[in-house]
Image 1: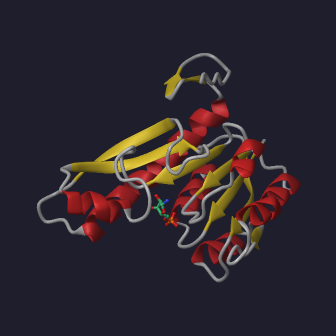
Image 2: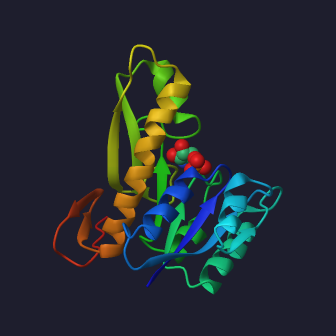
Length: 209
Ligand code: GRF
Protein backbone atom coordinates (compact mmCIF):
# COMPACT_ATOMS: atom_id res chain seq x y z
CA UNK A 1 0.00 0.00 0.00
CA UNK A 2 1.46 3.35 -1.07
CA UNK A 3 1.08 6.24 1.37
CA UNK A 4 0.37 9.69 0.00
CA UNK A 5 0.80 12.95 1.84
CA UNK A 6 -1.16 15.96 0.60
CA UNK A 7 0.02 19.52 1.21
CA UNK A 8 -2.49 22.31 0.63
CA UNK A 9 -3.25 25.88 1.61
CA UNK A 10 -6.88 26.45 0.64
CA UNK A 11 -9.88 25.12 -1.23
CA UNK A 12 -8.59 21.60 -1.74
CA UNK A 13 -10.42 20.57 -4.90
CA UNK A 14 -7.36 18.75 -6.25
CA UNK A 15 -7.03 16.92 -2.95
CA UNK A 16 -10.70 15.87 -3.21
CA UNK A 17 -10.16 14.67 -6.79
CA UNK A 18 -7.22 12.53 -5.65
CA UNK A 19 -9.18 11.17 -2.67
CA UNK A 20 -12.14 10.34 -4.93
CA UNK A 21 -9.85 8.56 -7.38
CA UNK A 22 -8.41 6.44 -4.58
CA UNK A 23 -11.86 5.64 -3.19
CA UNK A 24 -13.09 4.68 -6.67
CA UNK A 25 -10.09 2.40 -7.29
CA UNK A 26 -8.67 4.59 -10.06
CA UNK A 27 -5.41 4.81 -8.11
CA UNK A 28 -4.89 1.25 -6.93
CA UNK A 29 -3.13 0.21 -3.75
CA UNK A 30 -2.82 3.74 -2.36
CA UNK A 31 -4.13 5.72 0.54
CA UNK A 32 -3.85 9.26 1.87
CA UNK A 33 -1.99 9.02 5.17
CA UNK A 34 -1.99 12.68 6.08
CA UNK A 35 -3.21 16.05 4.81
CA UNK A 36 -1.22 19.07 5.95
CA UNK A 37 -2.06 22.75 5.56
CA UNK A 38 0.22 25.68 6.33
CA UNK A 39 -2.89 27.78 6.93
CA UNK A 40 -5.58 27.30 9.58
CA UNK A 41 -9.29 27.25 8.83
CA UNK A 42 -9.05 26.36 5.17
CA UNK A 43 -11.75 24.30 3.43
CA UNK A 44 -9.27 21.58 2.46
CA UNK A 45 -8.61 20.69 6.09
CA UNK A 46 -12.31 20.64 7.00
CA UNK A 47 -12.99 18.37 4.03
CA UNK A 48 -10.15 16.03 4.97
CA UNK A 49 -11.47 15.68 8.52
CA UNK A 50 -15.02 15.15 7.24
CA UNK A 51 -13.66 12.29 5.13
CA UNK A 52 -12.05 10.75 8.21
CA UNK A 53 -8.49 11.52 7.16
CA UNK A 54 -5.72 12.73 9.43
CA UNK A 55 -5.42 16.46 8.84
CA UNK A 56 -2.82 18.73 10.43
CA UNK A 57 -2.28 22.47 10.43
CA UNK A 58 1.38 23.46 10.62
CA UNK A 59 1.36 27.26 10.38
CA UNK A 60 4.12 28.80 8.30
CA UNK A 61 3.51 32.49 8.77
CA UNK A 62 6.54 34.32 10.07
CA UNK A 63 8.69 31.21 10.35
CA UNK A 64 11.99 30.58 8.58
CA UNK A 65 11.32 28.34 5.58
CA UNK A 66 13.50 25.43 6.56
CA UNK A 67 12.36 25.42 10.18
CA UNK A 68 8.77 25.07 8.99
CA UNK A 69 9.76 22.49 6.38
CA UNK A 70 11.48 20.37 9.01
CA UNK A 71 8.25 20.15 10.96
CA UNK A 72 6.25 19.28 7.83
CA UNK A 73 8.74 16.64 6.70
CA UNK A 74 8.76 15.20 10.23
CA UNK A 75 4.98 14.80 10.10
CA UNK A 76 5.10 13.28 6.60
CA UNK A 77 7.71 10.74 7.67
CA UNK A 78 5.88 9.98 10.90
CA UNK A 79 2.88 9.02 8.76
CA UNK A 80 4.99 6.85 6.46
CA UNK A 81 4.46 9.02 3.40
CA UNK A 82 6.20 7.82 0.23
CA UNK A 83 4.75 10.32 -2.25
CA UNK A 84 4.07 13.98 -1.51
CA UNK A 85 1.39 15.73 -3.59
CA UNK A 86 1.28 19.52 -3.53
CA UNK A 87 -2.31 20.53 -4.17
CA UNK A 88 -2.58 24.29 -4.00
CA UNK A 89 0.25 24.54 -1.46
CA UNK A 90 1.13 28.21 -1.59
CA UNK A 91 4.62 27.97 -0.20
CA UNK A 92 7.97 27.32 -1.81
CA UNK A 93 9.76 24.22 -0.57
CA UNK A 94 13.31 24.60 0.69
CA UNK A 95 16.04 22.65 -1.12
CA UNK A 96 16.35 20.59 2.05
CA UNK A 97 12.69 19.51 1.80
CA UNK A 98 13.09 18.58 -1.88
CA UNK A 99 16.12 16.42 -1.04
CA UNK A 100 14.15 14.45 1.54
CA UNK A 101 11.87 12.98 -1.16
CA UNK A 102 13.89 12.57 -4.37
CA UNK A 103 11.47 12.28 -7.34
CA UNK A 104 8.72 11.79 -4.84
CA UNK A 105 7.13 15.26 -4.74
CA UNK A 106 4.54 16.28 -7.34
CA UNK A 107 2.93 19.64 -8.00
CA UNK A 108 0.06 20.80 -10.19
CA UNK A 109 0.18 24.13 -11.94
CA UNK A 110 -2.69 25.74 -13.90
CA UNK A 111 -0.80 26.53 -17.12
CA UNK A 112 1.17 24.75 -19.79
CA UNK A 113 4.62 25.13 -18.27
CA UNK A 114 7.09 26.64 -18.94
CA UNK A 115 4.52 29.33 -19.87
CA UNK A 116 3.16 31.38 -16.99
CA UNK A 117 4.85 30.02 -13.86
CA UNK A 118 4.11 31.61 -10.51
CA UNK A 119 0.95 33.11 -9.12
CA UNK A 120 -2.33 33.61 -11.01
CA UNK A 121 -1.23 31.59 -14.01
CA UNK A 122 -4.72 31.51 -15.55
CA UNK A 123 -5.02 35.28 -15.32
CA UNK A 124 -1.55 35.68 -16.83
CA UNK A 125 -2.45 33.38 -19.74
CA UNK A 126 -5.80 35.08 -20.33
CA UNK A 127 -4.28 38.55 -20.28
CA UNK A 128 -1.53 37.46 -22.68
CA UNK A 129 -4.20 36.38 -25.15
CA UNK A 130 -3.22 32.75 -25.62
CA UNK A 131 -5.66 30.56 -27.57
CA UNK A 132 -4.72 27.40 -25.69
CA UNK A 133 -3.81 26.92 -22.07
CA UNK A 134 -4.07 24.01 -19.67
CA UNK A 135 -2.36 22.44 -16.70
CA UNK A 136 0.84 20.65 -15.83
CA UNK A 137 1.69 18.01 -13.23
CA UNK A 138 5.43 17.93 -12.66
CA UNK A 139 8.08 16.71 -10.27
CA UNK A 140 9.14 19.36 -7.79
CA UNK A 141 12.75 20.41 -7.91
CA UNK A 142 14.51 23.31 -6.27
CA UNK A 143 13.17 25.92 -8.72
CA UNK A 144 9.62 27.26 -8.85
CA UNK A 145 7.24 25.37 -11.19
CA UNK A 146 10.24 23.80 -12.90
CA UNK A 147 10.78 20.04 -12.49
CA UNK A 148 10.30 17.33 -15.14
CA UNK A 149 6.80 17.23 -16.62
CA UNK A 150 4.68 14.14 -15.96
CA UNK A 151 1.29 15.01 -17.51
CA UNK A 152 -0.10 18.04 -19.34
CA UNK A 153 -3.67 18.70 -20.48
CA UNK A 154 -4.65 21.40 -22.93
CA UNK A 155 -7.71 23.61 -22.70
CA UNK A 156 -8.98 25.98 -25.43
CA UNK A 157 -9.51 29.64 -24.63
CA UNK A 158 -12.96 30.51 -26.03
CA UNK A 159 -14.18 33.86 -27.34
CA UNK A 160 -16.63 34.39 -24.49
CA UNK A 161 -14.15 33.45 -21.74
CA UNK A 162 -13.04 35.58 -18.87
CA UNK A 163 -10.34 34.49 -16.42
CA UNK A 164 -12.96 32.79 -14.22
CA UNK A 165 -14.51 30.61 -16.92
CA UNK A 166 -11.05 29.74 -18.21
CA UNK A 167 -9.87 28.83 -14.68
CA UNK A 168 -12.90 26.59 -14.19
CA UNK A 169 -12.26 24.76 -17.48
CA UNK A 170 -8.60 24.28 -16.55
CA UNK A 171 -9.55 23.04 -13.07
CA UNK A 172 -11.67 20.22 -14.56
CA UNK A 173 -8.58 19.03 -16.41
CA UNK A 174 -6.37 19.44 -13.33
CA UNK A 175 -8.51 16.92 -11.51
CA UNK A 176 -8.06 14.38 -14.31
CA UNK A 177 -4.36 15.11 -14.81
CA UNK A 178 -3.36 14.67 -11.17
CA UNK A 179 -4.78 11.16 -10.97
CA UNK A 180 -3.02 10.18 -14.21
CA UNK A 181 0.30 11.52 -12.96
CA UNK A 182 0.06 9.78 -9.59
CA UNK A 183 -0.69 6.48 -11.34
CA UNK A 184 2.37 6.87 -13.58
CA UNK A 185 4.66 7.69 -10.67
CA UNK A 186 3.36 4.97 -8.35
CA UNK A 187 3.60 2.36 -11.11
CA UNK A 188 7.24 3.36 -11.62
CA UNK A 189 7.21 2.43 -15.30
CA UNK A 190 9.00 5.47 -16.63
CA UNK A 191 12.39 7.02 -17.07
CA UNK A 192 13.41 10.63 -16.57
CA UNK A 193 16.20 11.42 -18.99
CA UNK A 194 17.31 15.00 -18.59
CA UNK A 195 14.00 16.85 -18.38
CA UNK A 196 12.07 14.25 -20.38
CA UNK A 197 9.82 11.76 -18.69
CA UNK A 198 9.32 8.78 -20.96
CA UNK A 199 6.60 6.34 -20.01
CA UNK A 200 7.66 2.79 -20.75
CA UNK A 201 8.49 -0.57 -19.34
CA UNK A 202 11.41 0.19 -17.07
CA UNK A 203 10.72 0.14 -13.38
CA UNK A 204 13.30 2.73 -12.56
CA UNK A 205 13.81 6.44 -12.38
CA UNK A 206 17.00 7.57 -14.07
CA UNK A 207 17.97 11.18 -13.70
CA UNK A 208 20.71 12.61 -15.91
CA UNK A 209 22.14 16.02 -15.32
C1 GRF B 1 -5.04 24.93 -8.54
O1 GRF B 1 -5.39 25.75 -9.62
C2 GRF B 1 -3.64 24.41 -8.70
O2 GRF B 1 -3.28 24.19 -10.02
C3 GRF B 1 -2.82 25.52 -8.10
O3 GRF B 1 -3.57 25.99 -7.01
C4 GRF B 1 -4.94 25.71 -7.23
C5 GRF B 1 -5.41 24.89 -6.07
O4 GRF B 1 -6.79 24.63 -6.13
N1 GRF B 1 -1.50 25.05 -7.75
P1 GRF B 1 -7.42 23.57 -5.12
O5 GRF B 1 -7.06 24.06 -3.72
O6 GRF B 1 -6.83 22.23 -5.42
O7 GRF B 1 -8.89 23.64 -5.36
